[in-house]
Length: 259
Image (cartoon, rainbow, N blue to C red; front, top):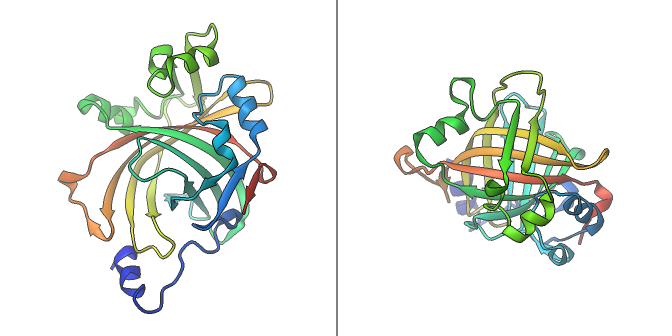
């Protein structure tokens, strides 16, 4: 029995909150506010993160997920999504902490992302890193035209200045090719986990680029499918693979207030 069908039955009698004991003490009742300066500074220096600064004053959690990455049993990634499920553009806070101690936090990322289905078999093979090419190579680049997919033309032109595009460097760039990370993401849409979905993360590759000597923008390129929804398995034939481009800025705990 999977988590969603289990808690759906449990909900009728002795329900158990599944949004307790999470990093930063965030749950579905939380209001999250962010210090604007770090994100504004990054955007001013050309970061491609997509957010209206006024919206950072009040954000409510719409769904919560945990991601288990293969080979990283001692770590877990949590995501607090601020958009309604199904939106092409997503805004979320990503926190990586110890699996057994959510207060021991390694990294906090403020993220905006765009999801889209791959176009054709060649695109799918690229995101799978087929034959040690595609996702997993030492760098990932976007031209000016590519970036118009993520931001308005005016915003891209303002942030790029005279540059033709941007290039992000993969972790350990000295290797020609590095297999991406894979894992499972479990998402809940309510505090008791009675609704939600499971996702198979086929590839997740981190990159970064310097905005200044001390300021960096992160890029995570992900490739995933939803394998079940509200406890109902989705057949392989009906699983839609999605590519996701996640632009992120690292934050410190002091930059975040949870009410």
